[in-house]
Image 1 (cartoon, one colour):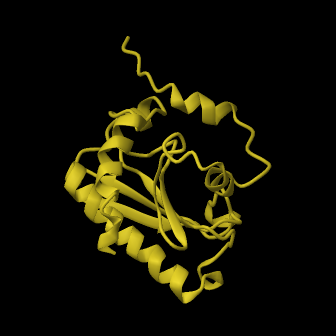
Image 2 (cartoon, rainbow, N blue to C red):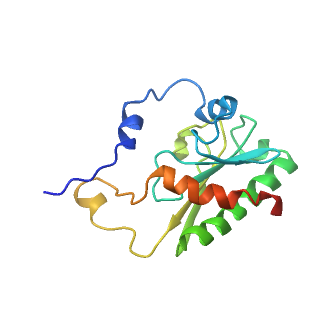
Image 3 (cartoon, helix red, strand yellow):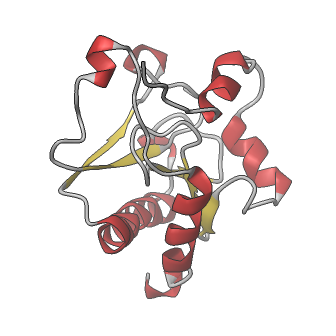
Length: 163
């Protein structure tokens, strides 16, 4: 029998799911490297998902704790989606994915884990990245450590001045 090692998942499984907003908490801590924050814009920030669907899975979120797109100012909304596009280009450079899943879950009924703080997920996809593991063993294999992903992307996000 083969064993798949994904120790970061246990932190999520055992963590308290109620309470404060993890996005707001990460911003206040000002420990960007430890929190995998790739960059801070004027109104939004980008951070890696601690429990990614694939390597490079990141989120863009506004600084303000708002639940929906219509709550954003024009400046926040424009920067938000510029960061999504910028991040996609950096994922292409770093990992050469074949496609992307990009989306928002607005509201608890839509699957939002943090319904009160809008955020956009960007998930790189590769042909063949879906296999039998999730079906047979209810397990997803992530082939790269978060620290490695962070280092590869952080270097690329330093060129944020391009925006």
